[in-house]
Image (cartoon, rainbow, N blue to C red; front, side, top):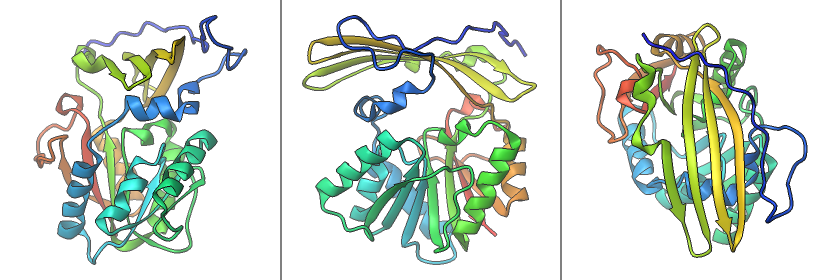
Length: 287
């Protein structure tokens, strides 16, 4: 296995002189303070995803799924869509800017709090007394829990927040056998709307295998109504190994019942589950 172990220096948030700097000290994850840009950057076919989730609910859950929980809900794109499929949705996120953006999104739709709601909460240990039938977490958001202890804590909290026989659908990507296979054409992508253009780079630079960390260089160049800016920052996410992910799930009351790729095709669990398969949906059943 060839691993590039070049250690890169942390980058601070850089804003061009065209607009006022947002922070002055070194920080990471400033990108998540800009929900508008996040929504543009990670736009996806939410309706198709929810139809896939719905098929999983029907196939694997022990009962009809009605209430859906979404940790690390981000800008609320799933919260906005789930009620349209007949589900009650509750999401939570640690970033207050994301939560406020989600609230405005849901209020604009006129949803009651029972239909769709969002709150500030830490996916590491937030437990709900009123149980949910299913939960979803997408875009490898779970990867921001990097330590074994935090991951165990999360799965324990989810186990206690879901009804027995309910589902937890987790979208993550595992480690590639060769780092070069992480270098895909979508490492750089472009999005735009009427007044905003973005160029984004998500460059996986090296694996810290001993500590199970995937090191990423992120850059966003943008022009918003004529104002140019650049954000550069490092991201560190859990380096997922399938065997370890399975261990975290089983130790805390879940069983992996099936695995699907981004085309919603079932993956044979007897094959090698690694990053060469792309991002995967793991369907976990609460025992």
